[in-house]
Image (cartoon, rainbow, N blue to C red):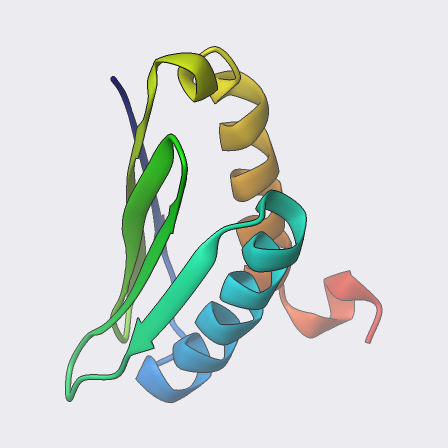
Length: 102
């Protein structure tokens, strides 16, 4: 098993962070074929994701995104690519609107 940990601080507050987390979940469902469930909380949301050989969660708070995942043996061979794709997508979603061209 290979572990993957990604953490990003932000200043969005929980409501805006929640919207980004929903977009992130939609993206990884399409891009990686993950099955995501979203649980809203008062101070923290959790996106749980899974597929064969890959599972974990994304914790969302008013000031932080924290992703923890476990990659199975075969999927672990692609850790670099998977991590790069997740980081790129999350950073893109967190970029200020003017940097995203909107």
